[in-house]
Length: 355
Image 1 (cartoon, helix red, strand yellow):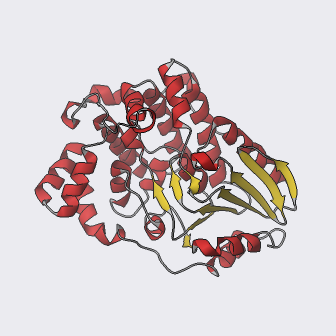
Image 2: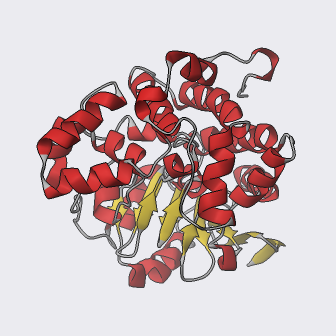
């Protein structure tokens, strides 16, 4: 076992596996700019090392793989008129795209809490393992933001309107629902992860994606759909619209307990964030590549970074924790096409580019 790098990110070779461990357990492994850079360096080393047959992404501690990005630091930069968003999201999104196309099998252990930036590091992997403890969510709309890190690509490829539902409500998926929503591939009981991890360190040199998949399947259950999947038909009927006003109207008409609970949830979210999210999800449906979605997300993210809603959403959820944001504008009906336009505009020299 060769230790390469310690600190907030641990990158080491164990047998045939290149291990990447997010190592901020007290913060549920929230990822910083430096951690993204260290993951890039680790992938460079592991890709070039012929002894490394497979990558394993894991989180330190018992609470989860990753609770998302370091939102507090982004908020501080936004308040001060800084440019951390521009720098961090550029490097993060380029890393997300690299993970999807990585040349060796990349196994993500999506155990416990997996949110935001943690989804970007795991749900684009070639082999995605959830557990009986998985709580996966993209709750960005509650921060005046939208599901980024390729979230619009992933959610737009979920069956029916399941992705629209998860993207707008920020509700949590368990392991089987993450598979139904196409965010994951197998449920492996958390108790079996150490044994699976050990087996991955012993795979043969040059192991193929199919061979790694067969190994994981030996540890997996056959669960592929959870409680939200059971509501597929209802969700399809309620969220099958291209305007937020129509989704709200459908929920109000429905009157079921589910519809009313969902309406209550949406009423807590940023109206502007919901409109931007729905537009990006619909555009992603007709977009063929992750990279195209990431370019669009980057344009929108830079607009979000300078918005009052982002600062207010983070303040209410993370800084003051009063859970009482004052959104601008306060109602869906007040979000105009003119407000939406800057989130979709090309940004010239600052456009996101991939190698």
